[in-house]
Image 1 (cartoon, rainbow, N blue to C red):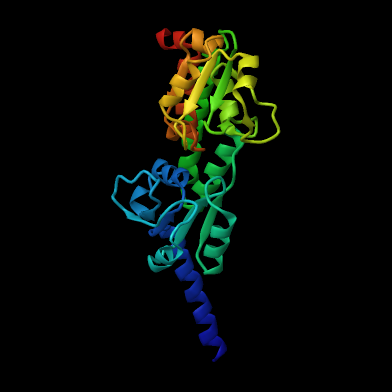
Image 2 (cartoon, rainbow, N blue to C red):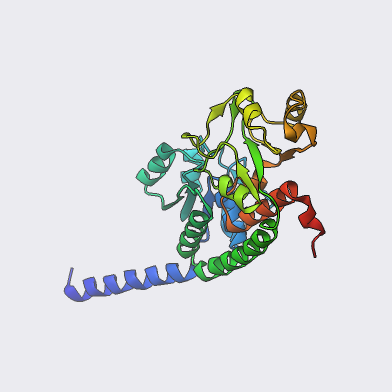
Amino acid sequence: MSKKILSLLIILLFFAAGIACAEGYSRIISIAPSATESLYALGLGDKLIALTIYCPNPYALDSIGTTLEPNIEQIVYLEPDLVIGCEEANSTRTIDKLKSLGLNVFFIEKSKDFTDICRNFILLGATVDKKEFALTIIKKAKDELDLIRQRTEKYPVKKVFWEVGARPLITINRESFVDEMIKFSGGINIFSKLKSKYPRINHEEVLKINPDIIILTTMGDVSSEEILRWKKYKTISAVKDNQIHIIDSSLVCWPIPANFVKGVRYVSNIIHPDIKNEK
């Protein structure tokens, strides 16, 4: 091969790469609900071709199984130009397998607070050529968070027990971004200082600390029946004051800037209901 032909081929390759970059991704597969919601937030729902059975799916897209066990063969068959996963939802084994098959994979790292959520959202935005839009979304989220915090700071801090599992009884510590969500909402997570991110506890420990609010998230075995179980413990302030609440997990468990704010707004209205009456 002559040098002229080789040089021409190199130029054509760079040109093609430039066109691909300019056009962005057009065949994206999401293997985590939070990744799917992030893409919708960035206006890229029409670029998705498949997602998991747990993802919001208004476009009736193809399913590639669950977050923990996505159908690798189906993903390869669909020939995506980008696969987006999430460290919180997907196994490292799945991500490594996808990469070993030559697929282009973006992996959203775990978020322990709102700062992490924003950083990961910006990185995703940059990957899909939506960085400026991502920054705009984050700016709006931060402004609303500031307004909520200004309101909640007027009220006494309340003790909150946050339940994510019923049998065994499981809560969250400060390594979960929900811990910060509780703080922004005017509360304090009563098990914030425990070592495990999702510590197992017992009812006696909850009774001893005596929370003002009990919040149950619809995850796994947590359902509306759990409210009835807690009502048996009549000495707890949350029970006496009828402050046991159940929240859809999708509202508070997906690490996305706008979703985080929505969760804080919802939880702050639970902890300090008088906020809703403020103008």
